Amino acid sequence: MPDLHDRVEIVDALYRFGLGQDLKDRELFASSFAADAELDFRPAAARWGARPALMTGREAIVDTILALFSGRVETTHQVTNPRVAVDGDTAHLTALVEAQHLLSADHGTHALLKNRYAVDLVRDGDRWVMRRVVIKNAWYTGDPLAIFG
Image (tube, rainbow, N blue to C red):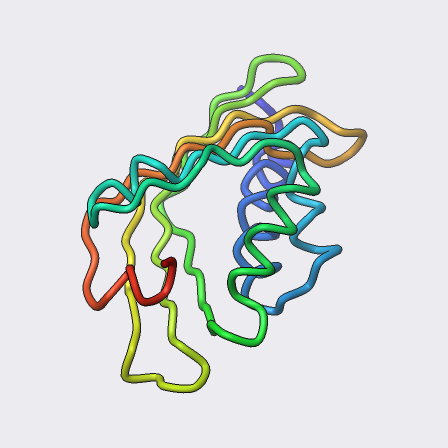
């Protein structure tokens, strides 16, 4: 069984991902990813008919998401039910993430998403970073197309 420090740091990578978006904090958000990270939002977006591209590379992921939300969308992310499996310097994490998205100019336009995350991570010194993130949607309310385009 991995030590508690590893488990905490593994889940913290996902916390940094959510809070970095919520605060529009580039450094915090970027700290959740490995340089060669992939973020696959395609399975979630397919639920409402969108077809985003696979995002690859830490800088491209951070640039894409922050540009989409900054000054336009307010978010809050809640992470629950984390499950961790560690194998040396790699790990796998599953969790439920509930993400509320509100248009800044009109809070009546929103999308509340309950997503299942599957995350592969790698050790980066004393912390862990996400190398591959696959997001699948369990359910949503509101208008995701108004939020994500």
